[in-house]
Image (cartoon, rainbow, N blue to C red; front, side, top):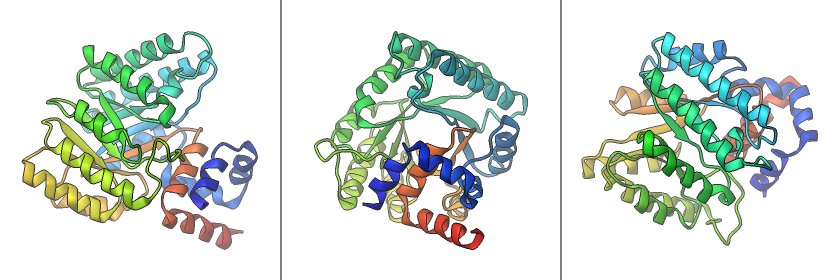
Amino acid sequence: MLRTALLAASRSTAVRRLVERGPGASVVNRFVAGATVDDVVAVIRAITADRLVTVDHLGEDTTDRAQAEAVVAAYKTLLARLDAEGLAGRAEVSVKLSALGQSLPIDAEKITVDAAREVCAAAAAAGTTVTVDMEDHTTTDATLAVVRELRVDFPWVGAVLQSQLRRTEGDCRELAVPGSRVRLCKGAYDEPAAVAFRRAADVDLSFVRCMKVLMGGGGLPMVATHDPRLVEIARYLGRQAGAEYELQMLYGVRPRAQVALAAEGERVRVYVPYGTEWYGYFMRRLAERPANMAFFLRTLLTRG
């Protein structure tokens, strides 16, 4: 119930104003690497000393074409900066198609594909890659269709699948091919039981089934979880299959574990978001883990 309430709050402008103005706003810095390119580059430089990074310019559900174009411009600026700073070899970008125009009322598909192509071309010029984030289940087919189209010219484009969706094991079988980069996560959206597993145990079982498929597919499984048990299962499956894989975690979540895994020789990539449109992302992070919510409430109490 708490998760559902937080996800509902992520869409509330009134709650957003309350969070932005209250003492808890500073907690956002734990999960978001600042508002500007300068802010995020400083964070990337520190992290890439021992880990890899994927960078998300925050924004979603764009309903204005000019705003979508501004998002593309922001990614091109970011990628040029990563190239100039010598960071592109250890940092890629993640994009949400709803930020590029997927929800526009007119010509959404063409605008989105063209925008994603621009970002991919900029990434290629910088010498890095792009992963297309997954959003709620209503966009899954459209998102995977865009990924397939992008891979014609940019075969390194990564896809994201969510183990909470009942369809995902099948999607893994389709995408688990040599050269395919697939990020597997649990999913951060409040999905209906008709399309998603609602019990945490069922989501975890689905996650393991999907990992087994991806580890045997010859591509690059990118295992995105903070669950220590699932991390260890991923490492075991990777060793058994002789597969190359990545462990991925969010900026601000279990940073000591990230460092420890990297020190043990694991390929660890950190998902680093930045920008002013942080609210929806932040609320989903609170909804994902009770520890995040407890941290936020402690901050409110100690600073209030």
